[in-house]
Length: 338
Ligand code: AHG
Ligand code: MN
Ligand code: MN
Ligand code: MN
Image (cartoon, rainbow, N blue to C red):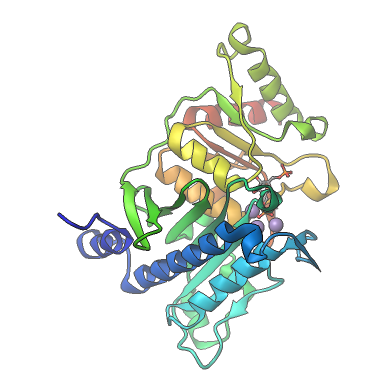
């Protein structure tokens, strides 16, 4: 065999043999992957490509935009506009939805993305990524203009989700609802080679990821859980924990996909984080779909993230995800404190 199995091969197989992907979602995912390739290229140029640093502008979330936030957003829009598989797109970096212009055919899917995740790591050459989620356009929206409300579907409705991580290697991690697979970008041939055919998150872990500097703002449940973790083998949890915090959700989740762990960005007492920091539609839902498909779990504290009924495109949510037994343990702490 001269050619290794790649993304196209995998998607065609999923469509033909398992019927889990439709032809238009397959083509859409190929296009998203192509855009991620272009983003990876821009990211890797760094200072040589003049892509580092911030702009004057702020996004709708009130964050100062980095040049790469905007470049990545534009690459994704440009790549996906003309394919005919989409009705509209929504992004962390845009105030509202972006409808497919009238001169292109209107498709039956919706694409949501965090074009560049881990913005604070761009200028320090630490792993960053792109997160995406695919929903179907509700039937009734076929005959009218797409509205923001058409996007407000719970995460269980996603037909595909994934992320690209721009790290020592560029990888694409994908689910179409039939487990989780990983591709590594072969930069010489430009092919996404299937290198991780069945990603599973171990159910047990002794590694947590949380930004400890927010400790004084946490709710009692998280405070209590982390206190118990820090007591180590002699404490009630009976194990010595390790800690990691990269501050790029993509990179932190990718580590969990590879070796297990628990990732937490809980709600806290700060005004801006009262409902959580991470965005339900662009970050929490796609990552929760991936994590569940890999045998893990994802909650907002009490509730399964994928079942949350969204009420706004840029809604924020508490996120606790990763190794199943550890996520369930943190859920118990929340139930005890509620
Ligand atoms: P983004 O760069 O897309 O705005 O997301 C940043 C998020 C997420 O990637 C990460 O887990 C978290 O912000 C880090 O936040 P802190 O700087 O508060 O630790
Ligand atoms: Mn941001
Ligand atoms: Mn992000
Ligand atoms: Mn972002």
